[in-house]
Amino acid sequence: MTENKKKQAAKKAIEALKKLYPNAKCSLSFKNPLQLLIATRLSAQCTDERVNRITPALFNRYPTLEDFADADVAEIEQYIHSCGLYKTKARDIVAAARMLRDKYDGKIPDTIEQLLKLPGVGRKTANLIIGDVYGKPAVVTDTHCIRISNRLGLCNTTNPVKVESELKKILPAHESNDFCHRLVLFGRDICRARSPRCTDCPIEWCPSKNAN
Image (cartoon, rainbow, N blue to C red; front, side):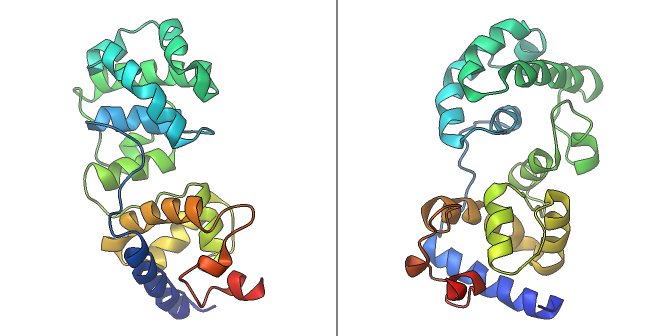
């Protein structure tokens, strides 16, 4: 598929998903940028649903950046134990909070480059912050985005960085962030990793749907 055709296909997919999910938003629960940063770190290899069950108690115990920066890593481990990789995540959360306090004047950076310097922050987290906090064009390449973009023929790679690069070429900048949020909802509901509900899919032209 040529880049021009991919742009046309992306536009059709955007419109179809808008009708299906008019209210596009992040499925993680948060009240401020720091909470989103931490919740996204916790979501690695863990469902958003489980993260949302963990974070209320965590954020109640540590309501501020200073609280996280001064926290005992072992105590945070107890709060996040059930979300997997809890030792690494707890260490990263405290280290990131300290870096934000000591090097960023307590503010969440507004560029990908600066965000990537924070412990435990990868491009997925950085793009989510850029899009949801600062309203800048962003492409969050989580598992749903990668899987569905490939099924739709919008890209032909499972490398997250390459998927991000390819989608940035074909998605309208102002639609990219919401499109990724809708892909998450679509991926959970219809375009599942296993047994996708192709008969219920509104994207009639999908090559994977037609192949099935």
